[in-house]
Image (tube, rainbow over the protein chains, first blue to last red):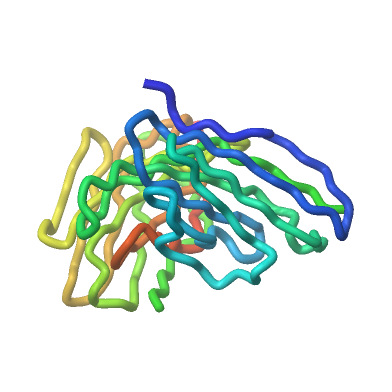
Length: 116
Length: 111
């Protein structure tokens, strides 16, 4: 079974631009979560999508948004980029057979975003 | 919200020795604790996980222990090998899929 894939793998943008990152979960997985990884703040939860609905959200400004499609693929968007948005953005997918059961999350390789 | 602290931040061991990484969490409602290994240029890879109804879990050279009363859990790697060198993250999950991660431990295994 193919793992979680993320595109693109690398991106360079300038301040003020916007960016869209894509994530394809493992086949059959219904939940997609996004995390930001930086040297200073570590791994931080951005948001989670399940059945095309945002189910959980972390403490990030409204410039960070996302969506999920009917095939469970997900995109995240960052508008008005700031230098501090430079990070590795990771996507994780899980089965989520039941809302109450914490399923294992499997991570993709990430998209490295550099904002100049 | 949940807070996870991880120690040590760096750990250097000789090949064949054991390595232990410890984490504490703050939210007593957390009930799922995975450990991830991250190599350079890659995403975190799950190596072992434990749920709150279990005190210990082992998978070959890797074991995890959980003390719910003290709110801490530990990763034990025995007979370390150079390929075990990586950054290891502990995490805790209370509800939904919002993992809270520790700060990471850089493990270096010297041949």
